[in-house]
Image (cartoon, rainbow, N blue to C red; front, side):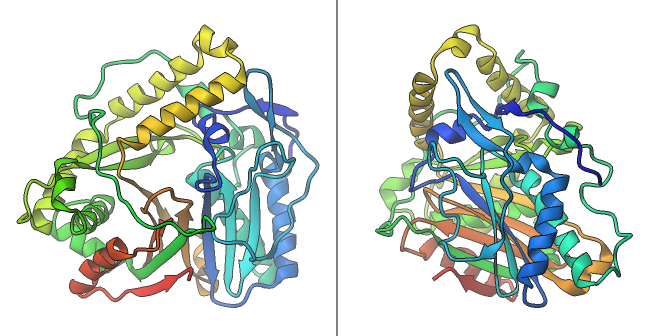
Amino acid sequence: MKAQKYVEWSRLDNASKIFPATWTLKDPKVFRIACELTEAVKPELLQKALDQTIDDIPVYKSVLRRGMFWYYMEKSDMRPEAHMESNTVCAPIYVGLRYNLLFRVSFFKNRINLEVFHALSDGAGALRFLQTLVHYYIILIGKGKFENTAAATDNASVSGLMDDSFGKHFIGQCGKRNRADVKDAKAYQIRGVRFDDNRMQLIEGSMSAKKVLDEAHKNDVTLTAYLASLFVYAIGKEMRARGRKYPVVLTVPVNLRQYYESVTVRNFFGFINISYRFDSDTEDLTTVIQGISERFKKALTVEQLDYQSNKYMSIERNLFARIVPLPIKDLVARLVVSKSVRHTTSIISNIGKITMPLEFAPYIRQFSVCTSAPRPQMTLCSYGDRLVVSISSPYRETDIQRNFFRVLSDYGIDIEISSSF
């Protein structure tokens, strides 16, 4: 794909605006997508692949700037450099006024890591970047063997990749609200002892995607709903009696590219809230699965996603909101996020089934995804028959993680556990 010119600066999309205002050292708004190869990474070839990828997706050369009223992306001439992993997982990338790229590429043994500040891209957009990077890397490893294999960015223009899809699909006129929405009630909060240096603990379980999907199908639920149910159940096992008066509320990001035509690598996601209340100590896993599944069916509709996105677009296009100075917008954003935290217990995000050319299968073992976390939260993705479930947490305690993976193990699923510690 030939690189094309693009504008020198661009506004942040609707979903991106919250991240520069609300990042902290405890929650730097960074996520990681990684590809584990079957052989050790060759640094010089990874750098060549990165040089090709950044030319295909030049929006990743953008830096974040502050204006009088809004943040905006500005084109830069900076070139990213792949380096051996040295930071903690999802360490801060954007730190205020520092002039730097909003992503980094690192490697460790067989693994290639892409870490992204969320204002630049969402998981689906970052995955496209990583797929392209791995594609070029394997071509170099194969010494021309796979040159005719299509890359993830083929048939996508630069303008399409950097498209603001919120502005394209939503005009800010709200339709009818879905009555299945979770009301803004206080949610159960997970507590724990934080690490002194703001480190994040990451525990990952790698397993057979087919075996987990078979268990989901036995319960007549989707993979996401099944794992969300197990996560809620694992949280419920640690709840004290007083905590049971509050519902467990999961926020679930939704890739809007599944519902609206878009190839953008920028943010283009909505979310739904799934609530479950433990009414007694006797509720078993089957009851939780049935309850969570019903809530997914009611909440995950095009009408709900359309209402939500138009609602946020209407705020962005409000004349008064547009003329308010940026420092005041930042303050309001932090207050809104601080309030919303009280209505959420955790987040579960499924990047989905990752595909690569079949010829690359001997070179790739699995993909994984994780995110910085102000509280324990789950991310997952699959490649071939390898499903990787990651639970990141700022706390030393691992009881919820242990409960979750133990349930899967009790169903006869072999799990390969790894930890950042």
